[in-house]
Image (cartoon, rainbow, N blue to C red; front, side):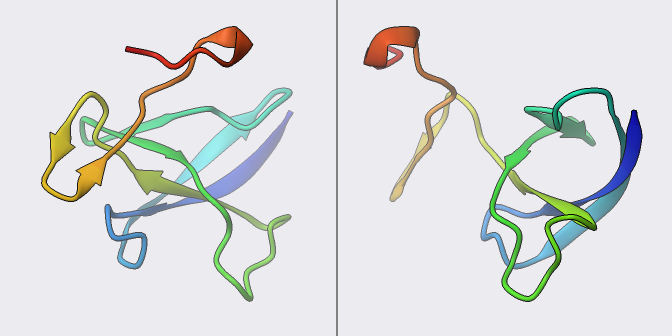
Length: 82
């Protein structure tokens, strides 16, 4: 087990909305819930050390807004989730 810092980015992936400490057993968490909103793993911004910090971006699962479509997940075998 180890502890890591996770930086939470807003929907635009530019504004930081929070930072949390997570405990990792084997793998990094696939989702972090913060203030009722889901945050999914994203690439660490350029110039940041991926060993020192994890990056998560805010998501809107099961919603489609004008110009925005997000996928909540995919089924095994390459089939798209409906």
